[in-house]
Amino acid sequence: MTNIILTGFPRVGKTTAIMKFLEKTKKKCSGFYTEEIKNQYGRREGFKVVGISTGKEGTLAHINVESFRKVGKYFVDFEGFEAVALPEMEMEKKVDLVIIDEIGKMELFSSKFKFQLMHNLNLGNVLATITKKGGGNYVELLKKRADIELIEITKKNRDEVVKE
Image (cartoon, rainbow, N blue to C red; front, side, top):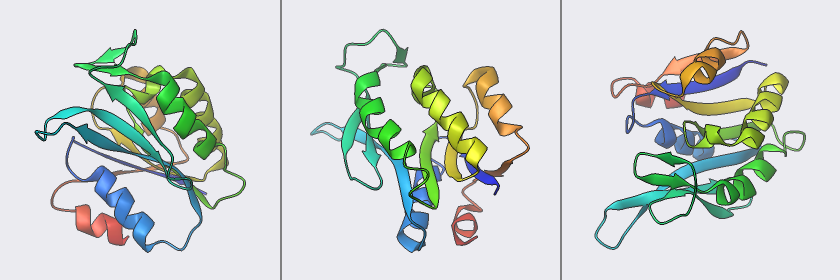
C-alpha cells in the first residue's frame, strides 16, 4: 500500500482535510491530529495533540511549558505529545490506517516519534500531513520515499483532495 502525505503552506487546510476524511471514511483509524490552544482573547498560546481512537489530549507545545526545545515562541512538550501520539501510532495492527497530523518541526524533535513514523511508513498504512517548507533533510527525504504519494493542498484544490 502507498502512504499518502498531504503538504501545503500553513493554514491552507491540511488538518481540515484530515478531519473531513475521518468524518466520511468507514476505515478503522488511529493516530492523532493537532489543534491550536487559544486563550480567552482568542490568541494562540500553543498546540494540543488529540488521539483519534481514544480522544485523549495532550500538549504538543505551549508558551508556558518548560522545555529545552523551542519553535518560534512555543516550547515543545515531549511528554504531553508522546503520551498521546505514540500509543495511537502503535495500534497499526488493529486499524486500517494510521493518521499523523502532522510531521513538522515540533513533532520531529521526538526521536521516539521518528522511529514509530518510519515503522508505520514501512507498513504502508499512513495518511499524514507534512510541512511544506522547513524540517530539514529529514522531511525532504521522507517526501522522496518511493512508497509515498505526496499531494499538495492549495486553497483551489483542497475540496477536491478530500473527495479523492
